[in-house]
Image (tube, rainbow, N blue to C red; front, side):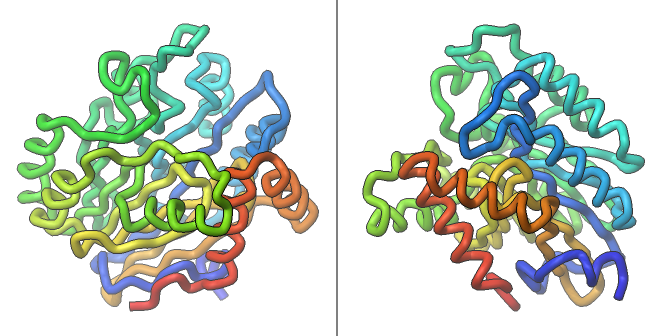
Length: 312
């Protein structure tokens, strides 16, 4: 058994991407909060969970750590400082894109981190970006907005300028893996479908006008999309694009994804970062928090029981 084979259950076996041996972690939605407690996100444990994930990743021989965002509760400077201290234990590159809770919003009562500062702090200094990770072309997109865009909304959207940049960038990328916070409809529709079981679930902000983005990605040969947002493992296929949605480290099922690309394809594993008591506690808290949290917990449990979600 290697440090990959014993990491956890297989989420997906994919035909693509394939190529030179590359291993990377996907660490999603930690929602770090150092001054709050409670809710299904277990705010009082968010930093502990992030630190546990970083410690586990440190022994997995990864080439990089990717994050689809929501690093903090709501973009508070003191929570970013805590994130920075936790991430300082990594000895590999960390590439993130902002989530809807990372960018400035109208309700903020603190000085939010600008998207430009986020890109400097948690990426290569720009958004969108193209970074080489092993044999992969990682393409990071901002679906969450800025102080001038989506300022009063938590939904996702990309600009025309981003689509133009993406079209040019994909033309030069050999093995494109796309990192974004919000999900395409094949994943978000799974949440909507669960309302037949949990009709009191609220509508969670989703990607608006997803087709232009999906068509640009498909035309450009994007091989894999990595997203977060719903705090549960899921997969979908839209316009021929394979998406893997990562679970969160903050609430059930506290975990991250460990991915390995080889000439034969890519395998994705789920790595728990809490013990059995921690997982059971998080399940109980999340399933009792609200109708929406209860529904998301049920979906998460169903996906965990269905691994692998895809085997190509």
